[in-house]
Image (cartoon, rainbow over all chains, first blue to last red; front, top):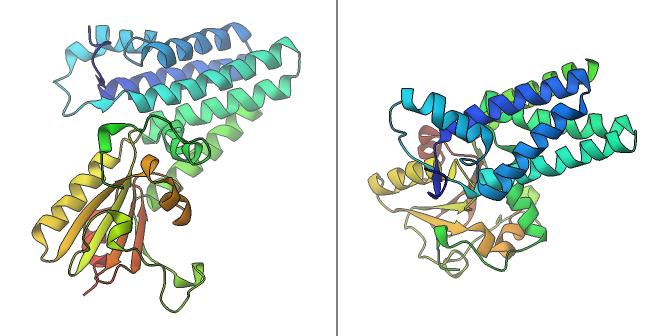
Length: 152
Length: 138
């Protein structure tokens, strides 16, 4: 079980982003709230339990990882967890749009989540990770992360 | 369908543009700041380390940052094999005042300082080795 370890295989993150892109594309094209609900649930597990414990992470560990060599380095799980939480918010907003029958809200939310997942899958660009600092500029953390301890 | 295609094209365009721009070391533009003659300056106290005799490479990092590792490796490499060049890493989250003042929007952001602490170059995203060497003041 690697879900308890602090690091995650970056290739697993890319794999998960690719699956997310495909699932969100299906949600966008079919307008199915069930597909969106399933993806939102995946986001929730990833945000709460970490990317390795999410269904896509488990699928990667079970089906893809055994065929690959050991990763050169592991990523800090904190960044992708934050990104999954951002995805969760978009998913919930999209579902809320369905519930109140304001389809525009759903299109915007799912479109944004799809764009973010696609950028991660195709370009390795993690939008959720990039906006983290902007978010912190407005809401400073009370527990500064000690991983990059530098004199201030 | 239209929504899907629009998002796909927009995201692809952004991705390509971002990849081109990412990690470029651009010369600092003094006109961005009030003191146009001197440009923005950082002191040893502000960055929490002594300035290099030739240049200081100030890297803003955060825990939630995948490319920071690559930036660290590149900058440490340049500092190690160039006389008078120092690499300083700053935790952006713990130094938000500096982050706001310098308009650091993402990590990693790298500032190239000359020996007086004046900002002469800036890169957002993991900088490229050749770019960093080229941006070093004489």
